[in-house]
Image (tube, rainbow, N blue to C red; front, side):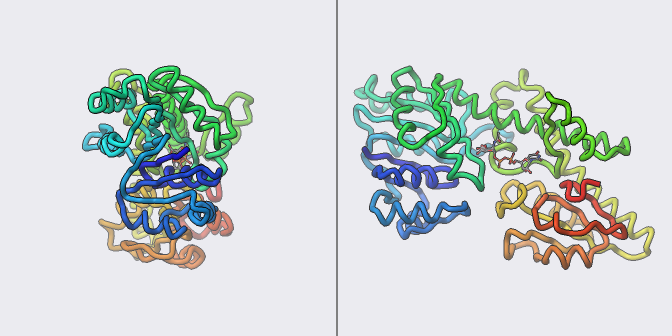
Length: 400
Ligand code: SAJ
């Protein structure tokens, strides 16, 4: 059996490596020749604990090879990004071009699986595209959708142990795709149809977005009402059927802040809560930036000099080095662009940044007058609360 992965990014690469680890012949394809070269040297171009070792083993054993062009295989997986266009409409052009690239290599008996997060109906659209070009394959291919669900930072474990939802364009396709996932997934495989599987992925991330929006909305209310939101959430969660998430500086990353728009864009009238949650979570970042600005003005009025402000954290969530779609980065940019004040920017998970000059977290905490915690990195939790500083704790470091 040969398995081909189109797309060797944050999901494609670890999945390909885990499949190769099973001794299965894996051909990985990426449009970026640098990525291909790096992988063929047994190295990786992304940060993910433990991944480099698995890739290295696969390459050394000869099970895992990367190239810029697709070839014949038995299983084809599409694992490319689905960003959005102008007004938050999903852009499936990468899925389309990956499908077109695989098309000439398909043969009777093959399985074609899309893992990329996709709007409802994408798998059926790709099936049509395939059969329009290759009508002789009608009834001869398994075509299915199976979303990835792994959490960055814990990908290798979750790839094997998470349950998967698998939906084919017909029951035979579903079964054939399941047979493939059985080779490396220890979690349960749940069978459904392609549209439900597509919607399931969007639902999972929208559910988390809505729940975080609830926590963020509470934080705005509590700020006005003079209530400590961290204590409030902790106490409410003592109820056996309440489980509120943590408020923060907004929602970032390339999944939760993106996927809900795929529902809103196609079903705008129906998706009231989902759309509103996106607005609330975006507004929370804007609100944090305003809070920091106001604190700087207040400090200046009170002390007759400009404050030094520490921006604590740039990543999109705690303990990672990923700054993509990061609310903390957005807030830092917003606050710093219009002010002449002194800023100390901290991000313990990266060594340098092309825009921000980075300062050590302890030094920044010591030197600054205003401390704005934007991300709950573990390092920050080792700092002692200091009553003589203005502390804006959007990440719940001191929970005060
Ligand atoms: N966040 C909060 N409060 C919380 C939890 C998270 O403000 O209580 C914020 C984080 O700081 C971050 C954002 O939400 O900015 C997203 O972080 P996350 O840890 O919730 O999720 P991701 O984006 O790293 O990964 C998600 C996961 N989906 C779900 O938990 C439903 C993961 O399982 C998916 O595979 C991934 O999206 C994806 O690729 O779709």
